[in-house]
Image 1 (cartoon, rainbow, N blue to C red):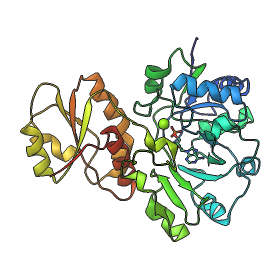
Image 2: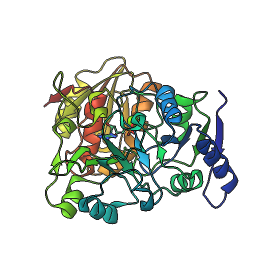
Image 3: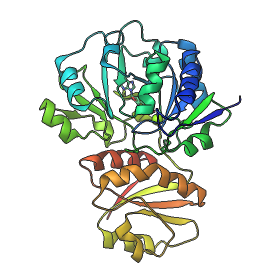
Image 4: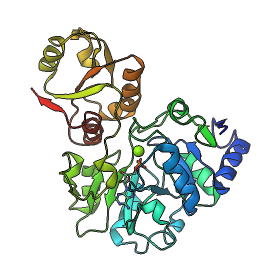
Length: 343
Ligand code: AMP
Ligand code: MG
């Protein structure tokens, strides 16, 4: 399949390209586009065939449900059977933005979107290109991250090109994504609101608005064999570069010593800028130690760079486990398949 590339500097400078991309979506095609979290691979979320094509292009397991993206809260009632008061509070505070809410679904939402669950995940992104694309297509847009299943999520159009060229109808190049990690997913169908995936909207911010908020144990722990996943995406190996990744949980001095003692061909460090001067192995830096937003923005590109550089074994310096750090930690845990060394 030929993949068109639309370079869009802004919705005002390139309305024609934007319209062409929206028309492809409306016709049932696949379009990768930027959001403030990561690039999404979009399709008309009410068209079952179009949604199936997403799974095929990504090689995504069919029981891993998709997020529906809207450009207006008026689109919500056709998708969610109930809109509890907590959802309204969250929408007022965090939409448009990097927060996804899981709500009971209406019969209009195809099973292919919800992975057979009776709930649906919905997000109202803040990125203007994303919003304008959704508005012009006139549909809620189902969009998982625009990467091949299992590989690090794309934060630039080049990442989408690397993974999906020839597999999708179009890629909208709108520059690099601000947050750099996927949205926070919160389930509102249980007694207590529960974070299924941490992201740019932090657990602390959610608690400020809602009071009690739980964090699903699968955010920081591997799931037991046969355990049912609240968020099916959590059970899969994720975000992984080709190299083996080991997460090293310790202070700077101990981390540097641990890595330098294991210096060998193919050994790399994925580290903070403060670690760089003392390390004797090749490094890829993913931001400053005290700057989780910077780490979130840099992480997926750093994981892809490690592959390009031919890393075989990567020792990753563990981030903080609160605030946006929790989201960075959650992705690194999965990139490392939960291989953590505490030093
Ligand atoms: P991605 O679009 O690749 O960021 O993945 C979407 C994430 O949202 C996956 O981890 C899914 O498990 C989660 N998700 C989507 N729909 C639901 C749902 N109805 N219930 C729980 N989690 C969901
Ligand atoms: Mg994904």
